[in-house]
Amino acid sequence: MTAVLSVRKLNKRFGAVIAADELSLDLVAGERISLIGANGAGKTTFVNMATGYLKPDSGSIALDGADIGRRSPRHVARLGISRSFQIPQLFIDLTAAENLAVAIAGARSEALSPYAPAEARGRRALAVGLLERFGLGQQADRPIAELAGGVRKLIDIAMALARRPKLLLLDEPTSGVSAEEKFATMDRVIHAVASDAATIVFVEHDMDIVSRYADRVVAFYSGRIIADGKPQAVLRDPDVRRYVTGGLR
Amino acid sequence: MRQWRFHPLVMVLPVIAAALAGRLLPTWTLSLATVAASNALVALGIVVLARTGNVSFGQGLFFAAGGYGVALVANAWGVTDATLQMLIGAACGGLLGLLIGPLIARYSGIFFGMLTLALSMVFYGALVKSSALGGSDGFNVGRPTLFGIVFVDPREADFMLYAVSVVTTGLAGIVAAILFRSEFGLVSLAVRENNLRVEYLGLSANRVIVANFAIAAAFAGASGAFALMAQRHIDPQFAYWTTSGEFVFIAVLAGYQSVMAVYVASLALELVRSFSNLYLPNTWQLVLGLFLLAVILFLPRGIGSLWAGRARKRADPVPDGGGAP
Image (cartoon, rainbow over all chains, first blue to last red; front, side, top):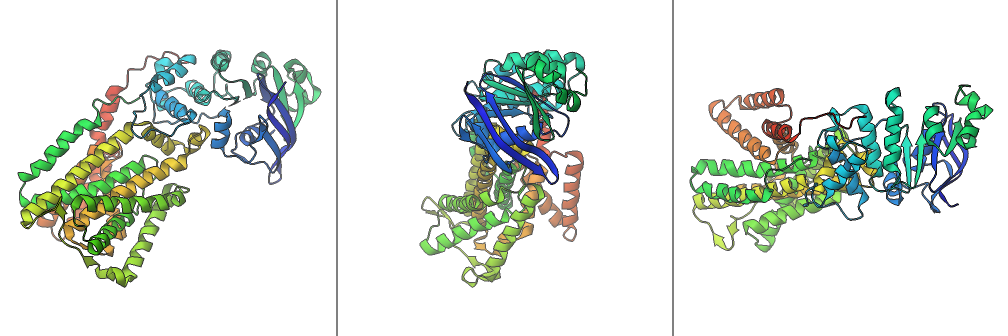
């Protein structure tokens, strides 16, 4: 099986804090991987390095064999890695469809048109179509500022999906969503991204979500990977129980 | 998405009508309207740039670059045609904007604004010290012509300049309106709100800022050409911070939601200034200040919010809550 993302001996420090300590990891095409770990374990730092926001102190990150460790978020996005955020990063004054239109503009290879209307050439249909995949077609013309947190989360993910990424990184897709709506939200996400994102990585704290939706779980502690494998095996691992799940399983 | 009720190109006819209406205006209003149209052009550029979240406090730099560029070309090669002079001014401002833009686009917020102000003051200082450009006194240029026609009658000359400035500013407004509704315009708004997210979507926020900056600079350069044609004299005051401040004043009055608001704000400012200067010659700045305060207090999003905000509300459908998880 070929690795979409290959990470070797990745290190990152913030002063005395070790956020990545000799991390090595291969993400295989088609996998649905969950990254787990306590706060400060290094999950988001890993996501930030994989998407170009942070540069590693040493080590390499390769996407389909090409080194991306020193690339900017824009270049990384263009190469095929998209992400969503723990706190949705949307354009608050724009409508949901306009947010998607910006994402669709970013996904195209040609330059931005200075004269064609933003909604022309079927772009609006594309934007609304993406929203409909998340069950949000009715929200297309509402400004983001008027939408609930859970809806914003889904729009954030829909924007990441606009360029049909090789690798989709979702940072806590169910955080801020009520307990009873978490599974419904995750069902929508998995259903919506299934056809477009070849490989999905999601950072998650809810172990019920992890065990239900992940094919593979990678557990972080102090910038290191302490367990990597099938969900049942990882969640039973003594180190994971001690440092991550707190003996809940 | 915002649904526009009509294509901006339909505004070509009202622009031509406004230019021809100059025939009916009293002479004293022609020069006032010319100054208002010329200032509106710079303010329109500031509004274009403000859509990316950045305000330039130093548009006087490009205003002066356009004016000096035209003056030098006019005196060296005898180029007197008003449309050519306007194009030369726009080219001077735009090229300078393209040169400075990539350096300045790395900054944002107050740093961006202060850097533009600093650059305009550096230019001002250089102009004052440059004896070849007339130093602080500046230098004169000849009367402009139009397509080979020389205007000897002052009333005809005023009307020609009024018509060319109104048509140019009107066309610039149409270009800006097309830009605002375009994909590029939408991404400009996105840059204003969250430039990092724009980068994560594979777009270059810096390039969008530079392009808007160059457009604003070209508009300011063309305006500098009009100011030169109206005064037939140029001096370093074109680049001084108070000149730049006046353009920002108009842009603040207008807000960033409507192109038409820029013209209304510029004309309102000129009218308030002219009449307060006439009736309250010693305290006209106070009246101007009170006028700005009143607009900020009652229309914090500018004069344009009087109609643009309402149009937006009408365009938004009533939410039905469907689809929320």
